[in-house]
Image (spheres, rainbow, N blue to C red):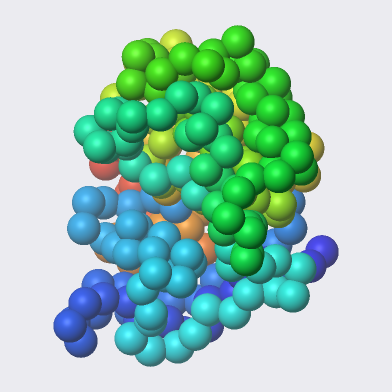
Length: 236
């Protein structure tokens, strides 16, 4: 199996102060990696490094020739600014093609086809002409996921994607992500929620009191995994 991203002995932080020290990892095609850990452990900083928005203080992150940096689909944490996008659902989803425009100034037929495919894929084609700001929280998250899918080919990066969603909508969202992974899309999900890690992930990265990266089964029998489960109240 081919790797997509590889981190080698990286330190991450700000103004010369490390938050994450000397971690190494590899994400292969088809993996479903959950990144777990306490607040302030550096999960979002790692996301920025994977997106090449933040350079490591030490070490390096290597990308496979199989993937271009502008082809990573990214669903960021929800914000109030996102919820007030003055745009239609179609326009929001199409904006996922911006990095693919190159020297073009306008979306072409292929861009619109990809956007329409993802609207149908997430069962929101009927919302196409609606204002994004008029949608429910669950609908908004489906639209933003469709935008991320419109941008990506092999790798989807999700940063706390279910924050603020009700339990039913959260469950639906996790099922969508599982289906995408079964279709061959590589998933990296940053989450406080242990359930996708327990139920769906193939691999876990843990940042906090210690560091772990490896198969899910090995994490939950490790010292770090047992301590994490106890901390989040999942002792069975």
